[in-house]
Length: 298
Image (cartoon, rainbow, N blue to C red):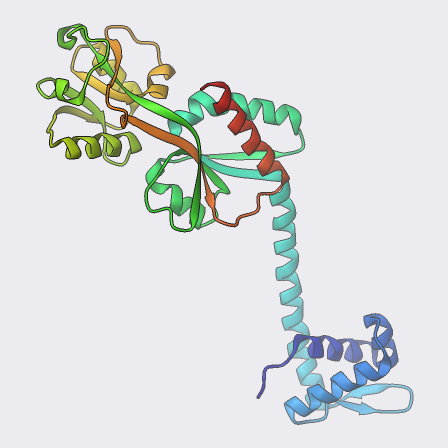
C-alpha cells in the first residue's frame, strides 16, 4: 500500500466525528468537494469503502469504524507529542542552558550571571560545569546550547569564537626561583613540576610544547584541582604550571609568578557552538554579556 497522506487521515477523522462532509469542510476551512475528493482518494488507497453516504449525513462502515478507532488513537498520541514539544520549546525560550570550564565559571561567569538576572528577571539560566574534553559531546547531545572554555581540537560541526588568549604561568617557590623575569621551558627541566592531569586543556598545551621541543619534565605531582596545585607550590613542593585565571582564583604566597618567553605558551578561551545553531533571544543576550566580560578584562 502506498504511504497514506496525513492530510487524508485528518479529513477522514473530521468527517467521522462530525458525520458530514459539509461540517468537516467548514471545520477545515475547505470546500465540501475538496473534502469529498480526499475521502475518495483515501478509500481508493485502502481499497474499501469507509462511509455510507446518505442524503444528510454519512455513516462509517464497519471497516471505516475500525480505521477510525485506530487512527483517532494514533492521531491523539501524535498531537500529545507535538504539544509536549511545544511546551518544551516554550520553556526553552525562557531558559538558557550553557556549559563552562570550571575555572571560568568560578572567576568570570558569576558576575555575568548576576548582571543577566537583573536585566532579564523572567529568564532562567542553567550552568553545567564541564572540562573541555567533554564540551563537544555536551553540545552534540544538545544538553547545552553553547560552551565557554578553552579551544578544543577536531571541531568538525562546531564553531569557536575566540574571546581572549590566556597565558600559561609558572608559580616558582624560592628554592627553585632563579630570579629571571621571563623563563623558557628549558629552564624547568631539572626541577619538580606540578601539573594538572591529562584531561585538561592546559595540560594538553604543555605536553604539545614539550613534544615539539623534545623535552621531558620531572612531573612530581599530577593533580585535578588548580587550588591544590597552588597550595603545593606555596608549600615549596615544586613549580606549578597553571593558566593565569587559575592563579587569580586564589590568594597564595610562597612563590613568584613568572611568564614564559615562548609565544605559544597561551591557550585561547572562547565560545563553542554548533554550526548553524540559531540562539534564542535570552541565549544571545547572555552570550553578549559574556563577550563583554572578557573584552573588559583583556
